[in-house]
Image: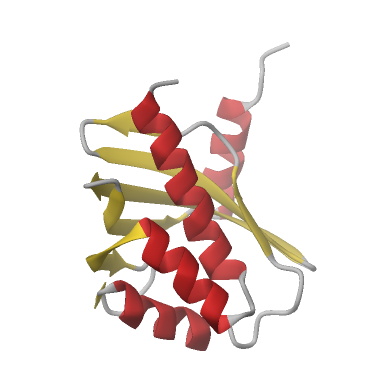
Amino acid sequence: MTSGEMAAGALFARWCAAWVSRDHEERLRHLQACCADDLEFVPGDSRPALRGWRALADHITAHTARWPAGVTAELVAPLETHHDWCRGYIRWTFPQAVAVGCDVARINGGKISTMIVFVETRANAEAVAAALSPTR
C-alpha cells in the first residue's frame, strides 16, 4: 500500500465517521479534517450537488435525522487509487438492512475535493461482494 492509499484510507474513515456521528460538533470536526473547504458532493440519488463541507454537514444532519441509532459505515474492500482519484465501496449497516455504495473521491492537497456517490443496486452489490470474495 502506498502512502497515498493510506492517506486516502484515513480520509474515507473520517468521511464515514462524519456520516454516522449523531453529534453535530463531532461531524464538523470529521468533515473539516477530511474535506476541502470547497468540496463538491454529488449524492447517489436525485438530491442536488452541494458545495462546501459546511453545507454538507447541514445536509448530513437533515438527511440522517431519522436514521436509527447504531448505523455504521465502513470500507469493505481496499481502496483503488488512480492519480488524484480513488474509489471505495462502503457498507452501510442499519439495524434492519445493509446497503453498499461506491464512492469516488478526488483528493487534492491531502483532502477530499470531490465526492461522487453511486448507490449500488442489490444485484450489483451481490456481484461486487462475490467478485471481492476470496476464491475457494
